[in-house]
Image 1 (cartoon, rainbow, N blue to C red):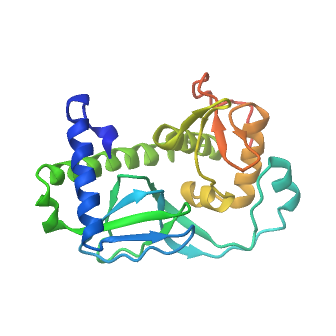
Image 2: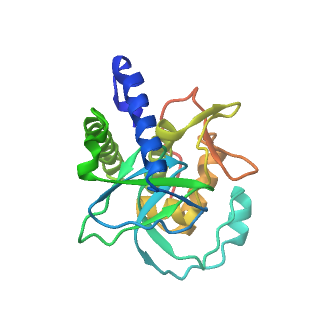
Length: 240
């Protein structure tokens, strides 16, 4: 939530966020979820990720793909072809809000361990003066990120879309380490495929290509890092 504010207001917004978290704890508005657990949500409420990351996805679409064990091992990531491929709509991190429309078929799932989510009704946003504006600013920031993501999907090649999406995640969630800027949670082939409208077998192949040409690295824990010393290069020799 805080990256959308100017330095002169960031301390105030942090204090308001702490007050809301304390209020939610006192009023039993916080819930903890384990990784991949469905988050209980209903329309009319605004939810905030108090800790961790949640993912918003559409209805799951089953698919039948050939065994990917050889190619998955080659890239350092393992993903079962039998898993359904949901359409990944967004990843929402700590301090960020989300809400569900009445007619939208969206599921919310905890993406990381011990994810905590608090809920607050729209009319309660004014309990802490200034917090309602913080929330509107946070939703505006999310809208801007979604526009960047949609623009990324207009790139012609899947490899460009995949690399662009990874850069967007690194910019928003990335943590600096010896390998560059790493995304601090695991993303499966299915989740990446659902994010850019591709298939797992294509994602497996593209990850191998991106790692081969030094655009990404993959840790033993299957977390993806991007070298911060490089700009987007969109190599012409990466062939789909």
